[in-house]
Figure 1 (tube, helix red, strand yellow):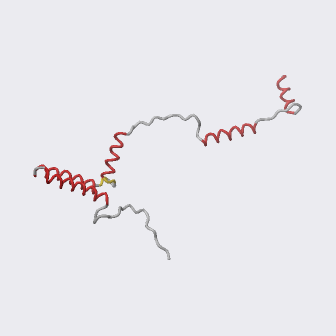
Figure 2 (cartoon, helix red, strand yellow):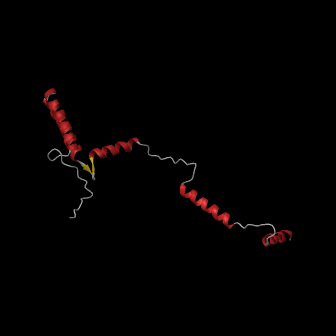
Figure 3 (cartoon, helix red, strand yellow):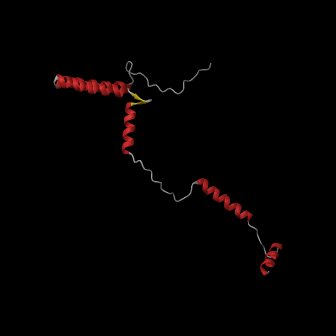
Length: 133
């Protein structure tokens, strides 16, 4: 019996109700801070802080820019800001492997193509005749 295996699954599992674990953590932390603020600060400050905190938490949990989630977008933004933007090329002392192989093959071909002149051969006689003229 053949079974098809799903591929290219990019959805995160829903852990807590309709939320993924990351979404639940963002909203839960903001809700906990809001609960703490409800009992410690005046009502008008609580309302302002709750709107800001819960708005940020829902933005982090659900907002996507393009196909990128907001936390990854923010991480990429700060890594772009603080990483160097100029790449300085540093020459390596040894050539790459493929260039070494090409150089070795070229040397072998040159060695094979050299004419071997020995004393007493016809080529030696021709060279001596040419030199004397």
